[in-house]
Image (cartoon, rainbow, N blue to C red; front, side, top):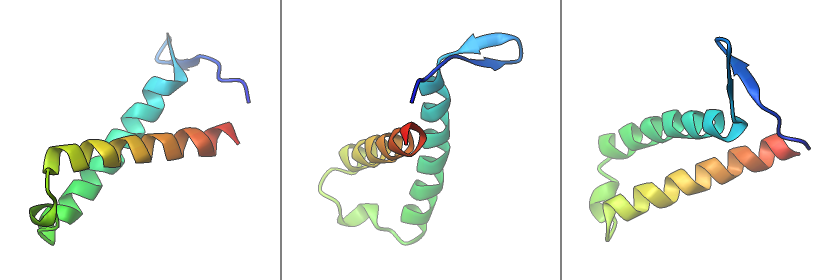
Amino acid sequence: MNFTEVELFGVYVAPISLMMAIAWLLLIAFRRVADHFTLLRHVWHPALFVFAAYIIILSSIVLVVAR
């Protein structure tokens, strides 16, 4: 699939930036669930775990859109 620029309020935006914003919103929801169940307490390095989760979410979005 060809990733072309997206027009957003009259400004052309790279599609990866929109995917990054969507991944960030999904990550916020994931962190709230993890905080509610105190799951990050059981992880060795919470910041690294959250970053890895963001990369996994972002790459999943890119793979779904590219298909």
